[in-house]
Length: 116
Image 1: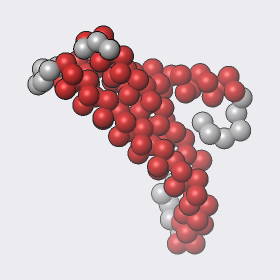
Image 2: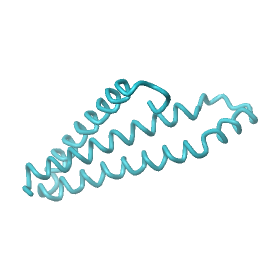
Image 3: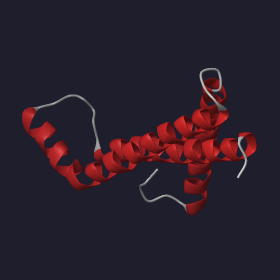
Image 4: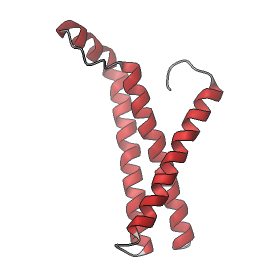
């Protein structure tokens, strides 16, 4: 997802994961309504989405910075985990896009349920 691919492919892939995140955000916002007020539910859903987003960005940047070193260490030690820098970058990019969709959906749910 972060390797040399066309802009259209990247946009479709990112859009798909943002939509997944938005669905999760709406489900979380709706589910949290059972345990609290609309404002508390949407605030909590936003915080969870922001947490996923932050973890994805942080882990992705760590993979970019340390990925080659981790791959070389695994080769040196004879590791058979199948971990690759490209795979890790893609996984953490997915988390980032899901977090963006989740947080955005929580904001939209807050506007719809609580108002501006």
